[in-house]
Structure formats: structure tokens, C-alpha cells
Length: 410
Image 1 (cartoon, rainbow, N blue to C red):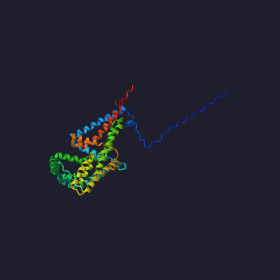
Image 2: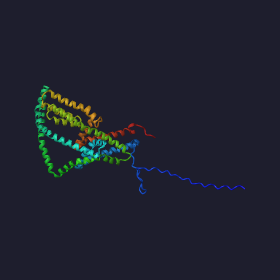
Image 3: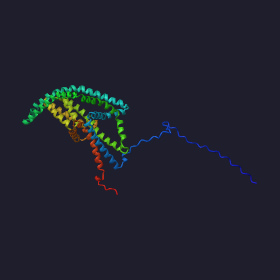
Image 4: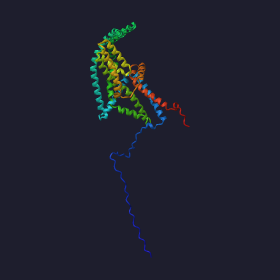
């Protein structure tokens, strides 16, 4: 007989070890009752867009920009009392935003940076007004006598320099222009007083105007403080596929506009100081007024310099003390233009060219004729936007088959 086989040994169950994930210190526990967070939509890179999609986005952006410009002018014509303060506040926030942003990069809170910029700007404005009002009042009191002497003394001075008599028509017109300018200046003060009195007589208009002017700094402060948030809100409203390309278009508008507006303000201020100091050293009548006109008039290309030279020559003839004055006046404008071309614009403002001089002149003339003084103020921003819109439309047109002549793919 064979021995019975031993029963098999019982198999012990092997314990299963579950790997426990390490706790996440910053992870938030999600309750089962709460829905899972929805991921924010991610903007599409503009390089991933097809040519047809990019063309469609650019054309829509161009149409919206043109429609927005039309809406702005419509609001100004209908609600000018409300729209003008808002536009002035937005313009102030746009101009000072780079300064506050730079302070913010240096770890200064944006609210404190905005407050610092406003306090510094207010002190500079008050100091400038307190200094310039007496100076301009003194200069303005000399204007009637300046034009009277110009009408009677300029022509003989010119005849003495050229050695020939000028035609009687030139003498007559010069005398008439001098007398009319003198009368205009003399009547400017009483006329301004009458306008102010009639304006103040309309209580409602006076209250609205004063309220509008007083609210501009307040609006500008809050616009400047919330500038990044406002731009972020606008950017969040853009379609995700278009946000990259549209942001680049707005950056192009900002580049063109800032290169002109901020640049010309800096150039105008520096040139005004140079011209005023140089003409004062030359002992020219109305030196400070002529310097400011020539400096800030440079925002309209060639106009400020041309008017400044003409007024300086008239003042030179009326206060002639010797050839050294002519040399000083010439040196003032030559040095000013050389510094503007080789130092101020390249090293302070930057090499970027905002708008061509011809475009600025045509824009000011056209919008001034169509919309008056408000059109003159908005001519440069509108010209900057139209320049970018036109360049975008031309760029997209040059990529079409109509322009390139490429055959359609089968």
C-alpha cells in the first residue's frame, strides 16, 4: 500500500501594499459636491493662425477701429460736456502711464506711484503758472507797441539792408498788418472779459464747465491707477483666437502714437527752454513768448521753427544793437535744431518715427476744417490709428492671390 499523500500546506495571503501619494502642501481639497474648476481659455498664438483667419481678424479689427473713431466724434458732437473731460482724463492717464509703470517695476505700489506722479505734476504746474503768468503778462503788455513799431520800422530797416526801396504796396500792407495786429491785441483783453462775463451769466453752462474741468484730475487719477486692469478687461473681451494678433495691432498703434505725442512734448519743452534762453541772451524783444511758440509749435513740423525765426527777425530789427545779435539768433536756432536732430530725438525720445511731417500737417488741416478745435486736438491720435489701419489693410492685400498672381490650388 502506498502511503497517503500529505495535505497541501495552506497558502497565506500576501498583503497588498497600496502606494500612498505624498500630500500636496498647497493643493486645495475639492469637495465632491463642488464641480471641478474650469480651465481658463488659452489664447491662440497668432503664428498658428492661417492666412485667411489672420486676414479676417485684421479686417474686423480695422472696421471696429474706424467705427470707434466715428463713435467718438459723434459723442463729442452730441455729449461734448461729458465726453471731453473723459477723453482728457484718458489722455492724461495714457501719457503718464509709462512713468507709473516704471515706478511699479521698482517695487512701488501703483497707488503710491500714481499719487507721487500727480503730486509732482501738480507742484510743477503750480510753480510754472506762478512763474509764467507774471512773465507773460509783462510780455503781453508789450505786444501792441511791438506791432506798432514793427509796422513803421521794419520796412526802413529792410530797405537799409538791401539798399533799395521796397514797393509802396509792401509798405502799405506792412503798416496795415501792424496796425491790425496792435488793435487785435489791445481788444483781446476786453473781448475775453466780455466773453467770460457772458459765459458766467449762463449759470448752467458755467456749472457744467467748472464741474467738467474739476472732474478731469479725479478721473485721470483713477484711470491711471486702474490702467492695467482696464486694459486687461478689454483684452479679456477679445476672442481667444484673435487676442494675440489684435494685441499686436494695438501695440503698433501705441508705438506710433507714443513716439509722436510723448516725444514731441519732450522735444517742445526742451526746445522752448533753448530758444527762450538764447533769444533772451541776444536781448530780443518778446524772447520768452517767441521761444515757447517756436518750441511747442514744433509739434506741427516746420511751423514752429518758421514762425519763431520770422518773429525773431522782427524783434531783432526793433531792438538792433549790432551784428552780434544776428549771430546770436542764428546760433540759437542752429544749436536748437542740431540738438533736436542729434541728441534730443535719438537719445531722449528714441529713434522711432511716429508720423511723417506731411501726415501730421494734412491731418491737422483736415480735422480742423471738419471738427474745429476738437478736431485739431484729436488729429494726431486719429492719424496714428489710421496709419496702422491703412498699413494693416495694405499688408493683407499684398498677401492675397489678387496681388501675388498665384494660381488657385486644385
